[in-house]
Image (cartoon, rainbow, N blue to C red; front, side, top):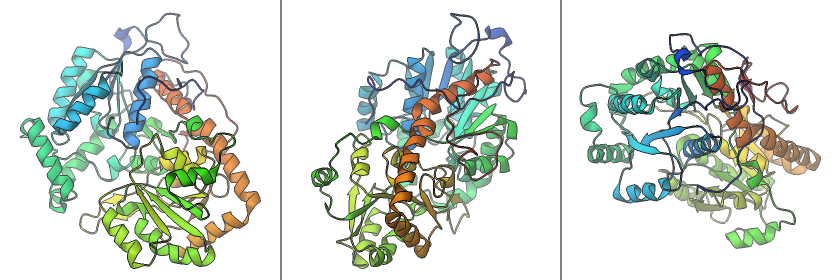
Length: 497
């Protein structure tokens, strides 16, 4: 899935982080004795060294997922820009995975320390403190809000990205100091993690540990110099737990837009034939994990109403998950065997071909509330929507969670009310019947993907946040002229999308 040696080196302008001096929140982390390092897009002396960055990327390849993809591109970009980096991530869970990570890490060109436990939070902090004191970073970047305490431990600025679900449902499995080291041994960590996954993290443990997990998450997030939210929805969650407004940034996107662009002379019929998809159907595709919040249990029954309005409609479901078998039985019980195709897992290096084969992309996510714990789960952004825009695909998505930070209704896609069959059918018919609207949305979506969602923009923005945290002066961001006002549904003074 991940190309360790090839690929474009992101170089585009970003949505900059402003010209604020000093290290973030002013709580005492100072770099005055570090020689004021300078980074790309920062005015300073020629030849000034790049800052050393410790990347705490808990989810990292070769595992597949949105967080892993973001982590891989960020580390690769920084390495190619000449930053001394060191990645710290979870330890492999099995003998097979240990071999896979050895093969993967061998080609990266930077060190990856796979030592973190999925269970023992406090022991992870001990690991990170020891690694940090050895590496001597100028700043720390984390892929979750959980490691703000490193600011005090290492006395350097700490920045993080939040995908929202680290706030909604903090995955700090064991939040106590006693026993943390014992739970972190590879064998115990692996066996208990498998147990939790098998039973979907038992509700009893959620209830017992919830308050302590919440306290750790909140206190850590408040210590961050900068928190980069993946949507306005996530920024709202962070504000609710007390993250200061001046520490919040909203940065939407993350896609290799050029890879998803259909080639000239592309033959959709031949593509469908090669993928085993119906050649003459009106093909609607969704790509997601098969879990409750993705709304597949809404989308499948809704296909009956969709096919009354669009008789040749066919739904392609890409992905796998814990509810996969149930969803297949649901499709059979509603008599939709001939109208639904389950593709299962598709490697990310091939996913663009499925977009090109499709007529529409549909995402039916909802805000899901656990009836026992009351915890929420939501689509906090939807990277697949960025990919669909990059592929020039007409996009119809639920007005839910962070989706409106990616899709603006009538501009780069259409929004429907979550779990509302009539609203879904109305928007699908509107898009199919109004060719002028559809062509305009596809063109605009493609432009936004290139100039807003592309990795070059996302990663350049990260560099400007790093510069600000280190007290450097960032160059003003490039204006793309596309999104005025910002492509979000919340009014937020620091939205970068």
